[in-house]
Image (cartoon, rainbow, N blue to C red; front, side):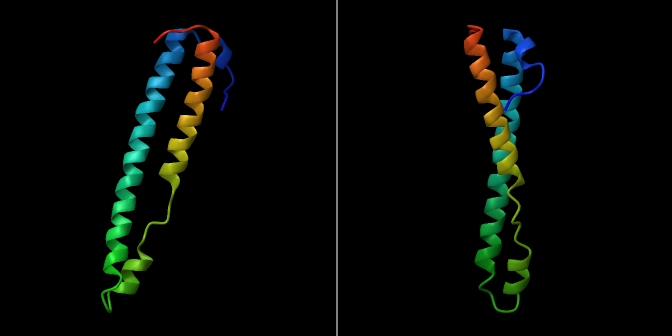
Length: 90
């Protein structure tokens, strides 16, 4: 995904943005993994009579972390394309 002003970035600016995006995407993917693990534990517990319905209803169905990570990865693809056009090395 492109943003206004991308063409004006120099190689150092592109490198900084790519590094920051990679770090943020890794954090979002880690958070997503933790949510997924918590959901698995809740779903396994849902077979317990009485507590089962409560645990199923408390399952986090959000995929916000996945969406944010994917957006950052897509942004990096665009920035890497620009970096290649500008013959940046990093």
